[in-house]
Structures are given as C-alpha cells and as structure tokens.
Image (cartoon, rainbow, N blue to C red; front, top):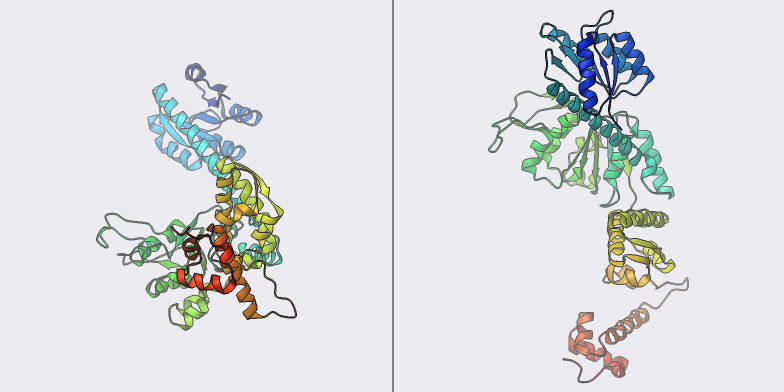
Length: 466
C-alpha cells in the first residue's frame, strides 16, 4: 500500500510542484490550500504524514498540527517554514511536529525528511505493538497454572500490581520469579515505562554498584565516560533486583537509602538526586536465616518484605505439570520445526511423579531436549529414561516402591533391591562381570562375592571379561 501524504500549502505553484514530485515517489497525495480544508481531508480519509506550511490564511500551521494530532495522535507532521519564522517552527515541534524544513528547499532533501518521518512512525507503531504484546504475555493468564497454590499466588500478584508497594518474591531456582515480576510490572500503572532487570548474583560486587547507581567520568580506573545506572534507567518504571540475597552488605546500605529516601548517588559524584522507581526483588535464599546469621541487613529485609509472594516449587503443584508440558511442547515444536504429538500415558505419569529439583526451568529444558531428539511421533517412557531423568536420583530408582499401611521389612527390602540391581547389571553387561561391576560402581571382587551369595552364577558368561 502506498503511503498517504496530505500537503497543506496556500501557494498554488509550490503545492502543485510538491504534488508532482511526491506522486513520482509513489505517494498517494491529497492537497489543501487552507488549514480548515486540510483538517476536513484528514478526518475523511487515511493519512500517514502531514506536510504543512506554517504561514496559512485564517489558521496557522501550529494550530493545524495541534488539531491534527488530537485526531490522529500517531500522525507524523513535517513543517515548511521561511527563515524568518524558525522560532515558530520550534514552537511547532513542541506542539507535536516531527521536524521542519526551511524554504527554499531541495525537493530531495524534503523527501529524505518525509521518508525519515515515515520510518519514525513505523518504529513507533512497532513499539506500541511490542508493548501491547508484552502486556498480554505477562498478564496473570500468561503465567500457566491452575493449581490452588498458583491461583493464590496469581490473585495476590494481581492485587499488589496496582500499588507501588515493594514486593519480595521468594522461591526456589527455576520457579518463575522473574516471570512473576514481569507480570506485576505489566499489570501496574508503570507498564508504559521501563522494567529494568538486574541479576545481583551474576555481576561482581566491584561492578554491581556502578551497574545499579552509575558513575562519573574518571571516578575509577576505566571510567572513561559518565554512566547512567539501572535505577535511573528505570525512572518512572520498575527495577527488578533478582537474587537480592547475594548482594554484599555494603551495597545493601545503598539500596536501603533508595527505599527510604528515593535518592541515588553515582560513584564519584558529590550529589544525590531523586528517583521515582518501584522496586521488586527476588531470592531463593531464606532471608530470615540470612538476617539471623548476619549476612543480610535486618532493616533492609523489613523494607523489602512489605509484600512477600512465595512461588511454590513444581513438586507442590504437580497438577500444573501436564498443562505446562503442553505449553512447552507447542513452543519447542514451533521453535525447532518438529512435530511431536504429545506424551504417552506412561510417560506423562512419570513426568508428573518426578520431583523436578530444577522446577519449571528444568521442565522446559527437558521438554525441548526430548522434542529435538525425538523429532516426531509421541514421547514414550523409553524416550524418558536415557534422556530425561538422572538414574542416580533415588526418586526415580525407587519410583515403583510403595509402603503399605502394614509396613515393610527395611532389611528385606534393601536386600531384594540389591538383588534386582545386580541382576539388571549382569543382564545389561551381557554377563560381563567387569562391566557389571563398573555399572554398579563396585569393586570386581565385591561383586563376585555378592553373585555367589545370591546364586547368580548362571547369569555370568565365563571368559567374557575382557
């Protein structure tokens, strides 16, 4: 579709020359000789860019721009002006014009300015779409979970989002703390401004202070220029301090000052200044214990702990695992151009019963690995064993063992389990005693004694140990 250009110019020769030129440049061109006529055309049809002369009869170009922007806020306006009215052109910029060009001008220079204005409009539109996408993505519904515990978390997050209160997100690694912080920000009144994320554990202490508060030129070796810190970058928005429990006591003091006084001071600067920032923090540490043991400031803890939100580990919300798997499966299929149809009933049961020490992050990574390795068809139990679970994990090895109400003999159970392991190792090694011993992490002579004790000699292939 051709870009649409509305030209408002009262001088007939200039208006017609502009029309001929921009039609050759593949523009849809509309013409008006007065501001009133131009505004009528603007309301009647699609206009991508307005090219307007400042000196118009009855209505000035500045007033045209003001009314045009009220009708189409995203409209790009370029002003044509004589040398003597440059101050008015600056006033037009304040009224919402994109830029101005002085008469007489080269038509190619004007075309370059119009092209730049349209590119600016395109970028603005993309930015609006991106912001709306982010809002949708990180709304409450975008955090997947229907279990009672997750419902409680999401309801609390929705309530605190509309406030400016400090939020402390607690939970094990991989539970989705950063995702929840984004959801809170994009539901808040600050959603149009920046969300700046800082991982306090990933940045050395010597650099973290500069990252957070900025520095002045020459304040330390290597400070070759002034740097704006993350608190300033988040002005009007939100800063998310992830892994706050790993922050050194010295920096904790500076963060405490921001919470108390809303002031920051760059490294090397003698002055402090106000910032308007909402602070959301997260940690996988027990901050109460950290305070008791002197590693975390008590006063800072109470400042951060205004509204604590605890994300449950995945093992406590197993009802959510199937829908999480479905979500990650679709995502991985699309990203890797694969066509996995789903998980078999047996495979899904094992996924649900697994303890997930790495929580949602581990689940997502494992689903992606399975999708890439399998490629198509259905994920089965056989696909899980070699690629999904660590066989050293006792939760997996003992997955099928149930303790009845009447109880069990611990000694007999351990003895039986040892026998199963030896039998399986000999079967897997093809009767090779050396390989079986390696599989079980046993000394060869120890394994031989156990084989004899259990009468498993028939499983051994003699002369097959090389």
